Image (cartoon, rainbow, N blue to C red):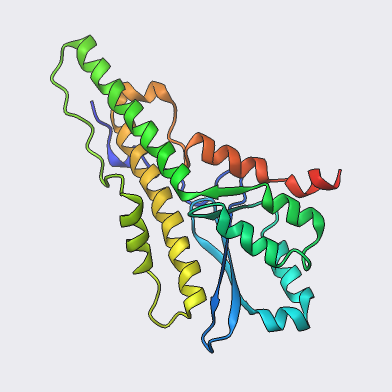
Length: 230
């Protein structure tokens, strides 16, 4: 038995106990000068703050970047791999307070690990449908995902087309990653909604806004700066 659409809404932006993500990117700004883009995202990838600061401005006024980077306190940095955020943090390490630098270095998420977790849950749900079919000897339709899990290269190519043509190169990089985070969160929400329509799969838990490991990492980041200070 499947439930109606009205029963399946998952809160998209408010996630108790989690602050969200931070995106860092380096590249040319609209004038061609080398700059740092800092994006602050909600747990599900919605942008809640965006800054582009040239490196020559950082040299003249490091306090400006410090104020911006504090906006990422209690959040996980996110990228396609750990090397990108780690390299940016190394470059601005002299500007950041040691406790904030340590907390950000210890809280980095990667898109591939998030995609893997979502795929694992889809496989678990598919297996549960098969078990129910065998147990009840019923004709049950397979789970139909609204969106199939993308190949990482396809997702990166899609995200690269998302930013506005008017964005500077460094902003376009940050916008592409922001779109990827939001798309990945959307894949999970599709997954949970599809599962929850099957009433016999509801025993696996209420719909969650993010996969368990992803959510746990975001929640663990909250207060991580104060833990460094303790």
